Length: 338
Image (cartoon, rainbow, N blue to C red; front, side, top):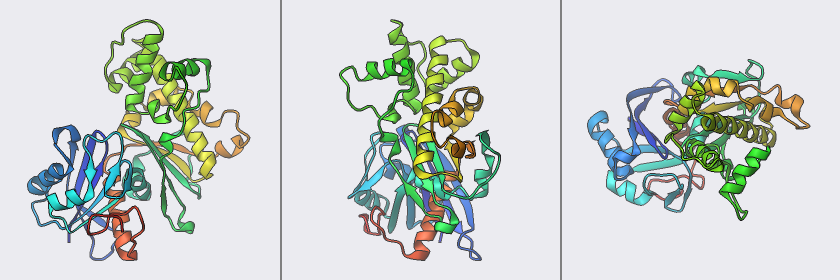
């Protein structure tokens, strides 16, 4: 029976109607697909119903959601959603029999071995596919990260909230930015710097430090101005963003011994690949670490988000169904954790 897979972020939701091949439970056929702007809907139930009525046009009873954040009780917790997500209310509104939930970057981890992940571009490190844990990191509306274990260890994906860890400044300029964001000290998450909104924050802070009003109002405008070298604060904001991303990725690669490589996911990064290439990303990924020899052998690639989230969620859902997985943090048929 066809089922829904949705990848729900803070800005966009990607929804697909999929069907497993009768010959192989791992082969998936995409019957319908659409990308929605979350702000166009009053809630997730309305968004899913719109897809079912206009695109699926068939009876749908099962759904898997890849959501930014984590399931706590009946709610998916995330500060960046356009609206709250409560699973019991969602199930009642959509009349779905089963809603399963996993983290959105956990879903991307399960998509790594899918052919659609092959559009990745090598940013630094050797052009190889070594064995070992693989990291997926993505700055978008927030900052997500997950770890894919190698097949020899079961191929499971570990979800994280690494984007909420404390930002660690590396340069004097970054200390000035941090002091402006937290003049009395306190917690500033990496997500506050390394994300789409974080790039806007960086740009605004750099303008404020010069006593100027910001002229640019979107991450796309900032990256475009940086590429054209038409705005000095945009250039510096992108430089700090890329450098901080390098530090963040290197720290996680050390933490999880990610010898299988690092994937930087999302159309936002993919579109600024040239800026990443000429930035201090690689230097900060490697710099000053005793395991520099190890990290220099870790390939770092940039890949588009695309359909990978929904495909990874669908692969996890089929795997869960075969294994009868009802681990905590997964929404069972009654809309609460199993």
